[in-house]
Image 1: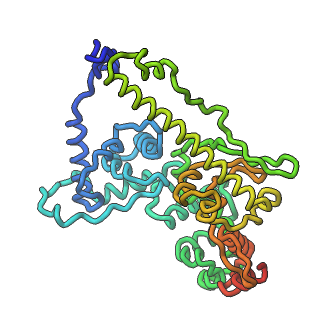
Image 2: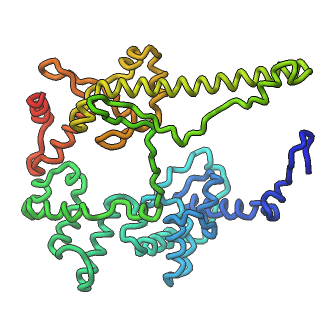
Image 3: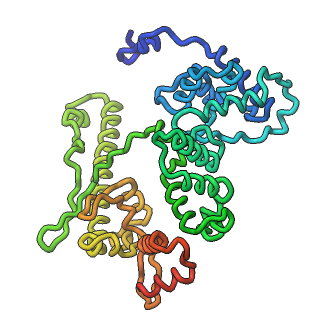
Length: 411
């Protein structure tokens, strides 16, 4: 078939090569019933989101994520039919393997028809227990505490069966006591207080902490694998002799050129119709402007990169700790453009340097004045604080005043 402009067209059926899909009325009814039943037990929001239909039992996602794996695993475990019925409640679980907590029902929906579910809260609890028995340990937990406890008790059971459980019986017992009652204190590094509470020395608490660190707080995340995004640098900072050069990585970029045939159409010899000639002339000017804009953006990036190289030679030659504070406004004034132009030019652009690949925005950071008036990059200051916290004695954590004094002594 041809349209009025002479282009080949095809119907949707011909393009798909299949019969048109059936209406989703049946799926919509199923979704409404399941959500309604869950709503009656206070575990779901009454509004049916069309996107939730894909998470219902029988609708398998192409990504093979945790919902699908759990659904398939639970159907083959020999549990009672009552335990299988509410499996749909798990499809709303987050990607990290912990069950999502549903918001409270909106009072505006109180007048809706009262649903009479054919399963009870006990059935739901049984279904949750089935899910929590699946692999990996910790999946289906309702919070971090339950997730870690599930993994600890799994290793404890494996150790009791003399299988491949990790850790010793005493370390596991201490770790369970810490996670069960003192998880918040552990996060606040109150090791001495925790030891007194569970009747164990501080060394035992630290051993339990080391074991807890080997656990997975997001056990379901391993099934939602996201392919890493490969970054190809847009520019390279290369030292040639005593001079730093900025080399644009545009070899693979297509070169835009104007077709000479269209240039002929602008003249009277090319086409006699004035309207056609004016239209071609307008498009021709737009194409020229586009090419100029692209070239101008490239020149702006080059100027910005040379400003970075001029200011950050210590970083390029000696490492990240020598990064100097640099503001977008300063560079914009130096190259004679508006700060927003610089901000747009460096957005999502990467540079290959002797220290690795960095986003161009990485080189811009605020300055923090030191005790002697010298400026330090805020990014470097954050790195120093992080290093101090990582290297501090866990039993005697540094106070803010101590960290401040150490940073001041470092300049």
